[in-house]
Amino acid sequence: MKLLRLTPALKSTSASYNQFSIGFKDTIDQTVCSLHEYHDVLIDKKIKVFHGQGSIFKMMFLIKRLIRKNKYDIVHIHNGLTGIIFILAIFPFRLNLLKRTVFTLHNSWNVLTLRNQFLDFIVMLASKKICTCGLSSLNSIPRWINFFIGYKTQPVVNGFDHNRIDNVETSRITRNNFDSNSKLKILCVGALNDTKNQIGLLEVLNHIKIEAELIFLGDGKNKKNLISFSKGVQDSIKIKFKGLVSRDLTIEHMLDADVCISLSKGEGLPIAVLEAMYSGCFMILSDIPPHKEVSPPQERCIFVDIYDANEIIRSLNFVIKNIEKIKDRRGISKKYSISKFGVHKMLSAYKEVYDSLS
Image 1: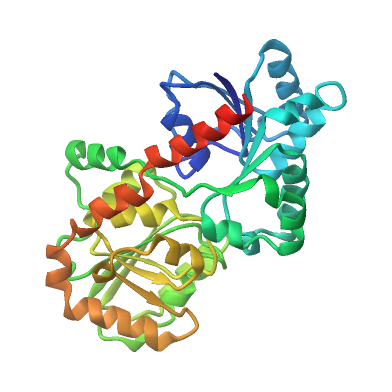
Image 2: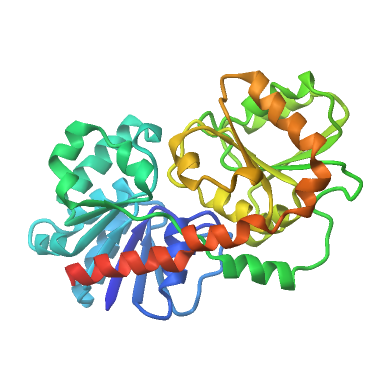
């Protein structure tokens, strides 16, 4: 099977590369075409990669050249904008390729900007098959849109590669990602923006007696404001913003952390939460549908209303009070994580989708 994969960028957080491309590297002949030049990720030699250097026109002509030279069985689109570029590239003489096109909605509909909702809707109308990154993502699509696309849409739950985490754990270089003297090690992973809602955690930290180290991994438009706000947090909490780091280093932090917190207002089905759960972190999660779909074992997770500061404070107090038990029970979530969200389960479902079209 020959597959053309279209994605906005290849980076350490890209599901299209880390889960899909790497997952299928031994079984499918893949060509990946990205809009932006890849960075901070090592491309596997079995995967052919091209990029448009950030130019819509360059990517369009690149796609034209690729489909002229290759007979692709499947075209998998991971983003509305790249889907529009693909449609422009095949118009008007190769529109038959739409019959072999899969589109994945990687987020909940309400999280998308109005622009991306419009682009995604056009591409979903044109695609032969649509997959959402879980049931909560499917349920987030408005009814009027489902009227047009519901018959060709199915949820495929996101999967994570536990082998990668195991490899990092066994081969990692000894280093102190957290201060070894920290009584409580807290990790937050995600883009620093309004949706991920890091400010929701920082705002409650002065209302609780806690000695802890808090590390934020990620970058985004709110970074400067978050750093400024964090300087007013009590001195007993050491706060670090480490920016974008490699996926392996992110996993190292998860393996070291006691608690992983996500007070996000919206998600697709978050890979970072799955990885942190498998890595042994106790989870404090906002009570949004995607987090509820992950539903970690009850003894390893607390769901909170992000608009109720007292709930967030109570969850942190619970962790402080039970920290020794939490540290001793890190392995509880591993079997659950693999059985529900192993990447092989996701890839098997997508292979069935590919086979149905090819």
